[in-house]
Image 1 (cartoon, rainbow, N blue to C red):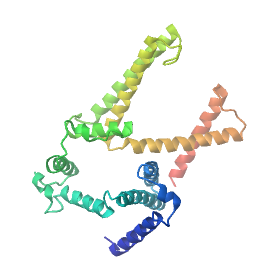
Image 2: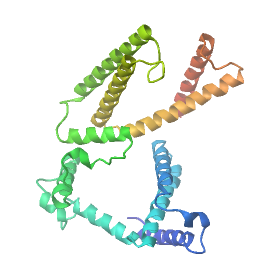
Image 3: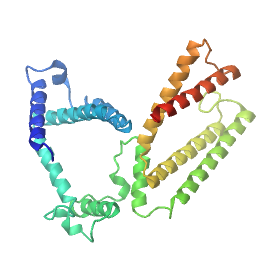
Image 4: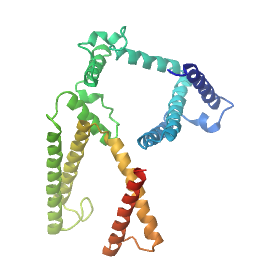
Length: 301
């Protein structure tokens, strides 16, 4: 590694800053925090780092990854202060795990017992990784899906479920089969939506409200189920195509924000009301197209 000593010195200085902030003479805010109170900060900083990486902004990524390191180290030091474990123990445990799970790199690795052939492809490495977790580390579950954290966000959980199932061979021969599944689920969503609209016309009311009926609520629940199946099939398609759906949705959200805020700003500038009318929709649609054009020109630079 280039400048190893500088990196070690930098981390030593960083740890000194952390311990000072948490000392009796440190910062009141930092001293009040606990691992539980820092959870939200860790999540937010992680998403901000992902956004910087996705934007391919290396300068911003440097700052945001530093903030992730800050939250990780601050929380780790809290556990050290409580006497649960030390930062050194956590780092050494991580190093031991990496060595154990890479017997194709570290010849004296405990994981060498699970080496079946040359781990010369990513697929073979991941398969070996799973065998080491199960047979060396004792991480055996009733289902391979049990290793996915229960509190994962739903979309990420769908992606991880699909990924683990596909690794076990529960898969299509090629991407066309996965695409066909997405199309099948979309058709089922359309049919479920038609059923909801049909009951609305016949009986009136809105789903799950006082004016609703048993049949309408049941139809709406079925629509909800079918949309869930569609989203899951898209998560599986993401696995097949090597796309993380969380990253994809983050980029889509950012793109929508930029385009819609452009529409809002220009509608206001032109004194055009934003309302559900044909004239308003025409103005907004034209501005949306302009925002897309500007975005395309900016990306081509």
